[in-house]
Length: 248
Image 1: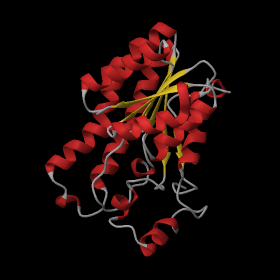
Image 2: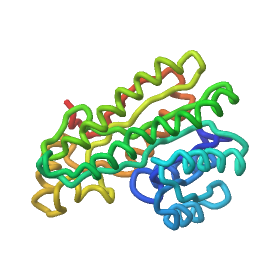
Image 3: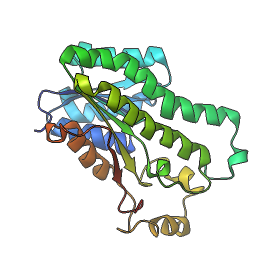
Image 4: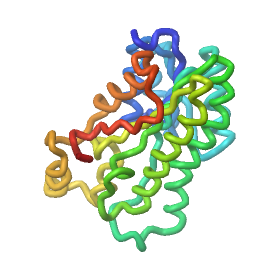
């Protein structure tokens, strides 16, 4: 029960990493807003978690949706202690010049601007509580880029820099900001990362991971739990590589 009494918001939580994090947080005593563009999926996940969770349809690139998301946590559970910015978007693996401007804009709206919007709304709430935790989902793509994912890689590099910059500015207020850098995992975006999902391409991706497998929602949930807990109270500005050795 390492998060007993804490209130968390997890975006992109209808599936994949976000779902795993939401499930683990509730199991550890937190009350959680399960937020996702897929509102029905978010509500289904929340229903499976019982009275400690509520589901909400949220476009993280929308200021009004972000405000409603944080307000839902306050109205339902009385405040906010942990914000997990996990929602993400990518283009299909391929030549950088083939990515349309609309797709590029959506990548940066979801992966980068959303963190700005969430900070605008969440940080004042953290200040009322005397501190808080922000965890951003970055990627090994922001540290050791793969070819064919130039604009996605770039957005995740921005997330890592944003995490470190926010950490420095907010540390005096006891607001910790860290990010997770997963390697490719068993999520809905895997096929886009690879270009297509085939046994041959999976084997190629796995061959670049020393431990010999893709990441899982459980891996991310364990890492997020640690960073959100008081056990990590002296950690801020960390880009934690949850990658089976991919970045070595």
